[in-house]
Structure formats: C-alpha cells, structure tokens
Image (cartoon, rainbow, N blue to C red; front, side, top):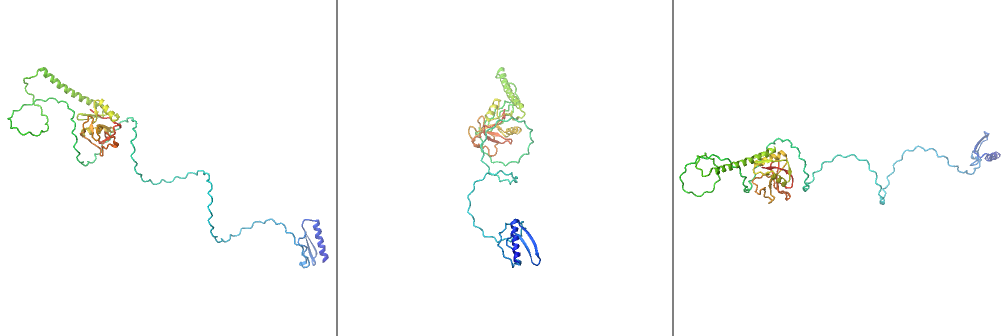
Length: 371
C-alpha cells in the first residue's frame, strides 16, 4: 500500500511538471482495492483511504473570487420600524444671494368682474373752465309738441313792495274825436272840504262837432295846426310800420302790445349783444310783465338757447335795473336765484321754462332785441 501511495504521489508531481493546466485523471486499479483520483496540482494533498490512511496535506491558497451571480428576486418589504425621536431644529442658514428674475409666466385667465363698489363722496366743485370757441350754428330743429301743464304750485308769501316803476314810453297821439254837446250850467253849490286827490279818470269821448263859431285864429294858423297833427300821426304810423317790417324779417319774432321781440341767431356776451341791438335801433329784450316774458320764452324754446335780458346789477349788487338805470318792475326768478355765484354773476338770462337766473356777463348767449 505504501508503494502505491508513493507511486500516486510521483505521478501527481509528474503531471504538475508536464502540464500546468488543471486536469482530471481517473484510473481504476482495483474495484476492491481503491479508486485513485489525481487532481493537479493538488491543493490539499492526497486523500487517504476513507480518510484513515492519508496524511492531511497543507492548506491550499484561496482561489480568486468568482463572477457575481445574477441578482436575486427582491424580497417582500419588511415591517415599518418605529418612528424615531424628532431631531432638534437646526440653526438658520445664511440668506443666499438674490436669484435672477425668472421669465414671465403665461397670462392667467381673466377673473370674473367683482361687484360694483359703493359710490365715493362727491368731489369739490371745480373751477369754471375757459370758454370754448364758438361753434357753428346748427340747423333749427322741428318744434316739439307742447308738454302737459304742470301741477299748480302753492301760493308763495307776498314779497316786499317793489320800487316805483319808470314811466312808460309815450304812446302815439290818437285821432281827434267829435266834440260833444255842451251841457246846461248848474247852480253853484256850497264850497266843500278839500278831498284827497282821486285817481285820474279815463278820457271822455269827444262830443259832436259844434257849429263853427267865429275863429279867433287866422286860416293859415288853423291849417298849420292841422298839418302838425297829421305829421304826428304819420310819424307814429311810420314807427309802427318799421316795427312790423323788422318782425317780418325774422319769422321767429313775437309782438306783444307795442313791443316786438326778434332774434337773428347771433350769439355773444352781454356788452356785444347790447351794442348790436342799439345799432339796429332797439335794445336788449326787457320784459315788464308776464305777457312779454311769455313771448320771450317762446323764442327761447324755439331756438333751445337761453338769452340775455336787458337787466343787470352791475352798478349796485343785488339791485337789478333796466338798461336806463330804472329799477325792474317785474321778475320771474328761478328758485334759489339770484345767488351771485362766486361773486361774478351780474347779468340775467332766461331759460326755456321762462325762469330767470343771474349769470356772468362774459358768457355767450343768444341775441334777442326789442323794438
């Protein structure tokens, strides 16, 4: 047996010397004796028979790590571990530098309109703006339908007694009537007490013409007197004719009594309008009663423009007079007027409702002359 083992060891050494590559030789010597397996080069020495007769060889050198096998299937997740204690709050870091402005994002969808806010307090009244340039006269529109009469207003308290009015213009001398019959002379009665002067009575009708008596005037003087009367009548007729001619030239004119109110459509300030009416032989319209005021109102409605009246308080604030300086005998002020707003309203205008308002004389209004 010792010889066999020695032989096997020899063969192993010979194989290692001749062939460096590992190989395996299997040889059956005796099925009943042993089976010899030679693995070269040997790492652990030759195995003994059943581990009883062999000598344990030296420990072989650890071989190189083999290639990593394929990754196994991921196992099921483990149970969640307990939550650890909260860590202490860290100290605040130093503020970093400001970053660059990013690009503007896309415009968002417009939101729904919010509810209207409550109106704010009224602002202070602004100063009056500069007067604009005069516009082109527009075409006269059609006359609107007459509105329904308004409710009757309450009777106001009687106003203070007005100043005595100026004496009206002297009328044209009327035709001489027939002389009446002279009555019988009555007996003279006793002298009574002097009474208060009564109102002036109406002029009596002229009686029938009496028989021609002896004239103390010469024929020439009588003719001169008759010619003088005729000349006065002619002058009155010419004045009336001139007045009607002026009204006929302006279809929108109005005649009230002995007055005619006309307009040419021109607009200007108070002094300009006053001068133009004077050059035409008249003056700015100056109503002295409700009928004349209504006639002026109709012209204002027709043109839909207020007009300046021949009335002002330029000389004495609050005392309105006509152009000749006489105090007014009629007025139709709007409620709350005149108020002399900002201390510069000294002229009078009339609105489409026939009411008066004090206004600055520098503003432009429609011309309206009276003849």
